[in-house]
Each structure stands twice: as C-alpha cells, then as structure tokens.
Image (cartoon, rainbow, N blue to C red; front, side, top):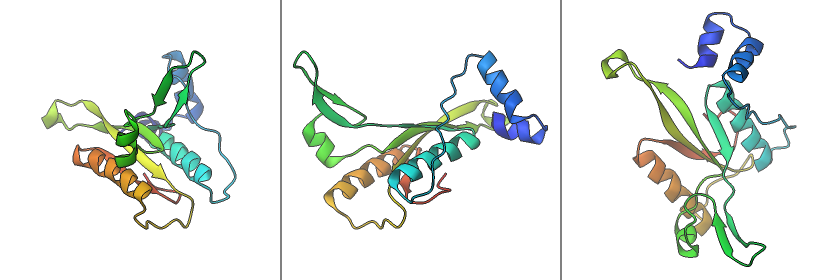
Length: 158
C-alpha cells in the first residue's frame, strides 16, 4: 500500500496528502494534463499522471548529445555512454520508481522498483526497426533485473 492508497482507505483528502508532502519537503513533480490528441506527448503525460495516482513517479529521460558553450562534447541520458552504445540499446522516454511494500516475512519494508516506459503514439505497432530493437533491448534488460518496463501506446499502462 502506498500513501495515496492509504489516504483513500482512510478518507484523507488529496489536499491533505499534498499538504503533508509539502510539509515534509517533498517536491511536486506532477505533470500538467494535456488534451488527448493521441500523440506520444499525450501518452507520456498520461503515463506520468497515472504513475503519480498510483504512488509512483516517472520523469522524462532526454537522450542526446551536443557541444557545450566551451566546445566540449556532451552526451546525456541513460545508456548513452557512446554512439555505439546508443545504436545498440536505447533507454526509455520515461524513467522512474514505484514503491512496493515488502511483507512482514521480508522485514516489513518498502522498496522501490525501477520503472521504464518507451512511449509511442496511439495506434503504434511494433515492426522491429533498428530503433525499436534497441529500445526493446533496454526494456528487456530492465525486466531481466526485476524492474517494470514496457512500450506504452495507450492510457492505462502501469
């Protein structure tokens, strides 16, 4: 059970939970809702809102490379250590964490599970392009290590 689920169970308002979070110094990272135009951007925002409603957090993982003002070459984003690596494995659009409560048998703690979503526009179908294969490789890596990863082309993907 996460804080949001607990609040619902005990009739605690959303405003009270947000007040508690603010009082504890938690940062509000909720994205702003957007109109449903079926775009990848809409899917990303919807996934982030859904994650927040379920007590998780997802952030945009921008990946790329550029030259800095002083002329240095800078790569950014997960799994983007080199051009070759980026051709073989591409990290997902959204990266985050969701709480999972461990049962009393397992010391009664909460752990965070790594979450990754590769967002696509509504109606997208996997075709196995080199880019999609590299994205799939990242998703398979995350799931092989116990994380929660997948493609998302519709609302309700968590």
